[in-house]
Structures are given as structure tokens and as C-alpha cells.
Image (cartoon, rainbow, N blue to C red):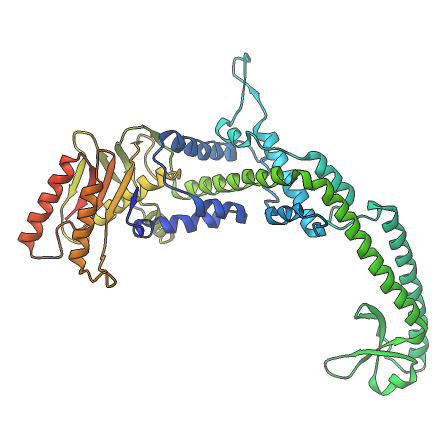
Length: 464
């Protein structure tokens, strides 16, 4: 359990999410960042950290890992469940390239290598390989799409005999019109009706020639448009009107044939819609893990070993946001050591203002939360960490106008909630403990609250 509901914003984790999103290469990965959740299952946390650790090693060991074409076409593919629907050319091209990427990732991660003694085969990246379990790949569909689309994502002439014939007729007709227009244009230029440097152009899908307005009645044809300045009109000569009409008909035939080809292919895809959509989870997870790996490099993060029981032994811990901020100013962060043990579960930090108490508390809270969300933390490799079921904080001004609570009353409400919720697997973080009222009263209340936390065997960092 996390308390209060503004926990992530107060502790700085909202900014961590934003930084992770900046490292994502697709919307798929960004959705995973949004869905990232705190876990108190040690095995889940270990697996998440192992995946990041392995991806960081993978990036150092090879440049061959497929990271292109992380397109999200799940909605478009899901649409194919309806009879008579189809994917447009661009959507089909994105499907082909992303399915190919999924296939390459699965092949890469399932590739076995021999142990040093050559007696057994192992997966080089077992935690990442587990992501591919149950993931279907569709090399045959990719191959069929290759038979339909060219390398630029356009329908090939060879996609069907009918399309090849239509495009042949279209090319021949366009060539005929072009020759006719060129002939008309040469005569018009020699008669001084049009300028010497003009050429045939397209207007509303029809080939026309640009003419000065004063000369438009001297060329027999249809005026289709004029320039914004009004100094040029675009005329379709009468000699090519029928041919242009035929081109429009052929273009319509071409579009109908393309839709027929795409609709026929959709019939082949339809039975596989569910596993295809499911396979995109692999792209999402890889993008997310990659973002965490890059963030770990930015912050010099580490993935410590996780124990099931609560424990904190952060050596040379650094607030990641502070490290990023000071790095821009070419300044160094002073690291800190924090240790909580079953014998010394609560760390009470007292000192003057601007002495770093709150930074210490927030560093502790943010790093523990990051860790239990599966994000690497900037600590020494000698650090150790455990798992807490609850993290409860009271940081900053919690004055509530809506509930008619003063700042101090709000703190007392938080203390009441924390005392009820606290147990031996709870981490409590309280900033400026006992302040906000007359010192003697505030101190007495703080002391009794602290004793209650001790009785419940809660863990915590408290500043005052």
C-alpha cells in the first residue's frame, strides 16, 4: 500500500516516469511506463531488475539486437475482426515491419549458446528470454505481405494480374496524353500563347497547361483552375479531355483492385488477430526495459540483490533527479549512506534548516519506491535492499481547504492513518516531525506517535 495518493508526485517519481518516457521509442513503451506499478513480491522485483541488468549487458555485448519498427497497429489489426474490413497500404506496411521485428527479437532471445565447458546449452539472457514464452510469430504472413508490398510500402504491380493490366493501361494512356500535351504546348509556344518555360501540370487529377488569362480563349479546352495571383489559368485542351476521363476511370479501377487485394489478405489475417495483437506486448516490454536500461546509464544506476524481508543498506546513495540536475551544471552530488536493520529500524535525523535532512529522506523514499517498481537505483554495488509492503509518507504542506483542515490538523490526520496502517513491513517517511504547533505540545505528540511506530515494529526515516 502506498499513502497518500499524491505519493509519486511528492517523492519525485512522477518525474522519473517522464524521464523514462523520453527514452521510449514507441507509444507501446510509454504505455508500459504509465502502467508501471509498485510491487511487494520479491520474486517479481528480482525478475524486473534482472531484465534491466541483462538488457544493459546486451547493449554492451552486441549491436545486432533488433530495435527498428516498433509500430503500434493493435487497433488497426483488431478492426479486422469485422468481415469486409481491410488494412490500408501504410497500415499493412507497419504491420509487416513490426511483425518482422517481433520475429527477430524472439529468434535473438531464444538463441542458445554453449557453456564454457561445452557440456550444456544455455540462454545468454534468460530473464529477457522469458518474455518470449508463449509469443507467436508470423513469418508466413510477413512473407505474404512481401508478395503484396514493395520495399517502400506500395502495392506491387504483381500483386494481381488485373492490377498489372490496369497499371499498364494507365501508364500507356498517361504517356499518350503527355505526348499530345507536349505537342499542343509547342504549337502554343510558337504562336506566343504561352510562355517558353512552362510545362504540363496536374490540377484535380487532370493534366493541364498553364496559360496567360489574356490568351485563354485562343486555346480550345476547359478552364479548371487559376493561380492565386490570377496571372495564370490552367486549361485542359479539348484533344485530351476524353483521354483524361479514361485515366480517371483507370485510377478508380486501380483503387478498387487494391481494395480487393487488401480485403482478400485481411481474410487470411482474421483467424490470427488475437495472437497478433497479443504479440505486441513483447515490443512494449522490450521498449520499456530498454528505457529503464538507458535511464540506469544516465543516473549510474545499479540493480542490488533483493531480500524478501525488509532491510535497507544503501551505500553511496544519490537522488537521481539531483544527479541529473547537477550534472547539467557540471557539479557533483554528495552521496549518502543509509542503513536500517531489525535492531535499528527507525532513523531520526535532526538538524538545522537547509542541512540536507529532507533530501536524505526523499532520497531514501524515492530509491526504495523505484526499486520496488523495477527501476535501477544510483547506489554502490555493495548495497543491499529488502521489500516493504507499505510505504507511507508525510511530506510538505498538506493543508486541505476542501476538508477544512489546517496544515497541522492535516499532519495529525496523516499520523492517525499511519499508526493504524503500520506494521513490521511498513516504511514510514515523515518530514519536519512534530512541527506546525507550539513546540512543547508538538514534541510530546511526536514522541507518543514515534513510540507507537516502535511498538508496531515499523521502519522509517523521520526528520525534525
